Structure formats: C-alpha cells, structure tokens
Image (cartoon, rainbow, N blue to C red):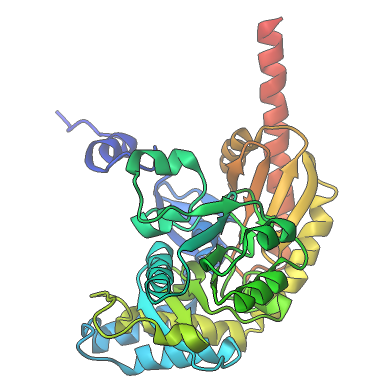
Length: 406
C-alpha cells in the first residue's frame, strides 16, 4: 500500500499560522521575470514578491554576491562590522545625494525600518520636539506595534490596542497638513505612493509642503520608501522626484533583491537623536544581506535600470489603455495601480493566475503591478496577452453564472 499523498495546502494549514490565508501556489524556482511552481507551471511575475525582487529571479550578479559572501562569512553580530555593511551604507548615502550628516541603521524588514523611525520620532518628542505624531489616512507602515501605530486601517489595529502612541491621521492634502501642523508636532510619517491603499500617489506639491512645514515647526519629516525606493518609481527614491530631503527615510523590499534587509536612513539633525544602546538588531546589517544590497545597487547602475523603468512604465501605460477592464492607471515607474471598470479585482487576480500571470489586488477595484525592474518589451507584450486571457476567462465565468441564474 502506498502512503497517501497529502496536498501541500493541507500541510501548510497544519503547520503554519493562518495569518496569510491559503497561498495561491507553491513556487519552486524562477528566472528573470518568470517563476515556476512545484509542478513546473510557469508564471509571468508582475508582482516581484510585492516589489521585492527588483532584479527578477536568479539574477547572476545577486546569486554570485550571495554565494561569494556565504563562502566567506554570513554573520558577525553588531559587536563587529564588515566591509559589506560599511560599503552598503556608503552606497545608500551616495545614491541619496550624500545628505549632510547622513547615517544608516540596518535591520531586516520594512516594518523594522519603520519601527526604528518611530523610535526616532518618540525620542525627538521626549527631547522636547513636540508631543503629536501625524500620519496619513490610508497609510500602511507595517504590523509591529510602533509601525502599526502609524498604520491607518482600523481593522489591522483594533485587536492590538492600546498601541505605542495615539497617532493623528489626516487626509493626504496640503490643506489638511497645513491645518494640522503646529509646534507640538514631533513627526509626520508619509508614503510618497500608498501602495497597500491601492497605489495612491500623494497630490502634487505635498512632499514640498511637508518639508517646508516640518522645518517651520521643528518636526521630523519621515518618508516610508519601503515600496517606492530602490528605483521602483524611476528614481532611486520617490522623494527625489520632488527635490526634497527627509529627516528620515526607510527602505526594505527591493533593497536586498529578495534577501531580507531593511534600512532606516537619517540625515542632518535626525542623525543625532538616537545614542548608543537606544536601538539595535542582532541580524541587522549582516554581511550576507548587505552584500546582496550592494549587488542590487551595482546591477541597477551597470544595467541602467532606472532608464529601463521609465521606458517600460510608458509602454505598460500605453498597453493598458487598450486592454479590457482597465479604466485608468495611476502610480509612477513600475509601481502602477490599474483601476478596473468593475469591482472584480480579486476575481481577476485568480483568473490571471490561471492564465499564468501574477498580479495583486489591494482593493476590490484596483490591480497593483510591481514587476521586476529588469523586464523588457517581450515581458510587457506577454503581460498584455495574459491579462487579456484572464479577462476573457472572467467574462466566461460571468456568462456561465448568468445562465445558471436564468
């Protein structure tokens, strides 16, 4: 008698906490913009692990950097440092424009990067910098207790209250920010594009107004670049498009190309707020992750991927204008939100997966696209074909449902 095969869905449900629901597939390996499941089925990845796999999958430079560093040393703790850690800090400050007094704290994820920024805000508050913290309606900054405090959605917050601070949420308008600002504000948290809220860019002039107002009131401007950073919008960081420099900005996702790493970057006065022992991370800035980060930056530069982001973004926008269900497109670079003609986004995601296309629905009427920065014209064209196939499948399902109801 052969042993009964247990589906991977059952094994997952039995052994992992149910915080993510049931995964859509069991993926095994990838190459470029393509991933393959355990049965060998191929999918065009237009989500990149939610804006993480900036270089796609199995990029030679990233694979080589990880392998070479793993053969030398993976971990040294923060009692020591490494050439990779110092080098990545220098790289990040260089591509940020060498801000005055720039410093970097490395951690392991976006929520940890924002947790560090939150502690900087609280320390600034403690040092006399005001007692109020502002964040924006629809903000998402993470799920740890500090980052969750500046995350807007009540459904995510309510079971864990009281949180680390009473944060005030305001509409993402210049007028609302001007009305809320006074000398009691310690910090303002914001995302240049609110990805989890449906890829919602801040209105024109908001970043410039936030920079002006925070300076006037001795508050910190903290910019969450976890999803928008590392070239995703066509510049290294989205705040650069507005010509401003935050006091603090946070990174993760694309920084390691898939290797877990985050960074809290401080500039000017913000670099002197935390002192020895105020914050830390056992794994933060380990040689393996920082070597991966250096490889990502090196590949983006040597392969001119910022230029590629601009070209592919324009092609995708033009293509989407003629695709079924696509009403309009918002976002920047290769972080795009497609508003659908009907509220069928979750169903379209399922149909797209069946058609071999990975996309995401942050809400009922929006599809989020965040493909690898390395995509070319063939992948853009293939995206159009698979999107169209998914829409046709969705229409057939609707027709079948209507016939059954008749």
